[in-house]
Length: 132
Image (cartoon, rainbow, N blue to C red):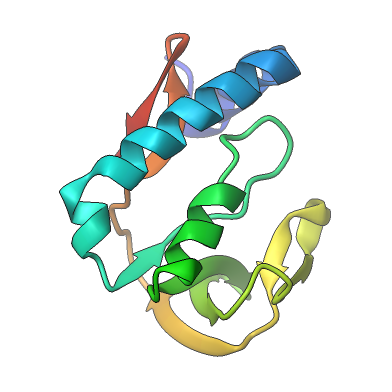
């Protein structure tokens, strides 16, 4: 049975074969679904990643959240832990490790010191959706 690292590598390899058209279409579908959720509409704060490579595009979600007065926190790796920092606009980021956009440390929102669950927009078996 493959370990977590092997599974992650397989998923990334498969995701990297997706076309730009597929990424754009499904990112739009996911964004529209998310923006229509009552949980999103009622949220005061969202924790979301900045996409990189063939990941689901999150820029429109972030722009919408900021335009609607929500606090937005994005992740950054610090030492051996994941930290989320608030951003005030999309320009509050710079390329970090591996070129992945990271926050400019505007304000710490949350430190992950143990395993945590989170929901993330994703592609599942060729369909746009949410992963947990």
